[in-house]
Image (cartoon, rainbow, N blue to C red; front, side):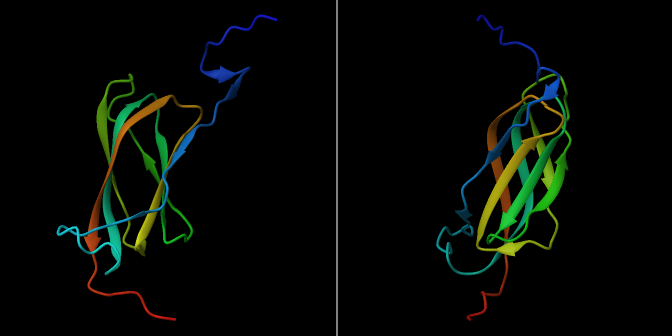
Length: 126
């Protein structure tokens, strides 16, 4: 048969899409502290084009995710940046970020940046 690939849904059902980064380690400004102190994320910036709001999930050291809604400045697929302030409760050395569409929103990403805060404590030894 012949099928036409068009539209924003799959026979009336929203299409779910997401991007999940691998776990990544953070470094301080000297780029020497990859495995030293613990970190917290202050802000995350996302660059791209979106048609609706997105969901942002932040994982630290494999713990449960903290969830945020990313509200775009422009809804007409214009290239722009979006900023999300991250709560103070997520502390770790390794982080992962998941960005997902809401209600089948169309999105394309070209940049994800994070502002780390270096904490003065090291992790406890078991």
